[in-house]
Length: 172
Image (cartoon, rainbow, N blue to C red):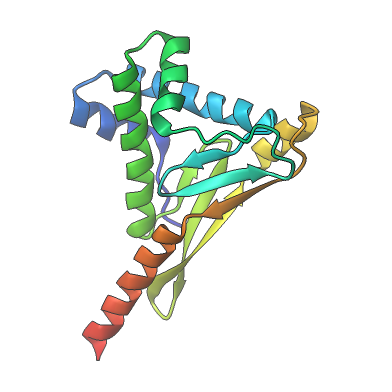
């Protein structure tokens, strides 16, 4: 069975690190995921900064939105301070990136997953895929975006390649 990062573990780790309740962390993460799904359904691009981005086939909302602004929208909806939402979402994404860099599959429930691929005993490539739940949601809601695709950030791919190169250098 492949190693995977679970949302409950992430929530616990983030709650402990920032001294905030697990319920609050879970609420923030869940509402951020709902926001991302809605943005995709309405034809917008969603960035998980440093990890991957998801683009619709027909991008109707051509806005460059920062993570801070997205967090402001989520904070306004759930009544949490904007900075708290930003810190929790950033920690969530950073934990996903760290999971991939350590060889575990990172999954954003209901949206996408990122799988590090092993070759010659080292993690050297990344495969990203859109979740079937998101595809069904887009199809069933008659969303305007059409098909959606996930793209892994080149910086993350480069970090994985650098680590493989470092391991190769040690073996030489």
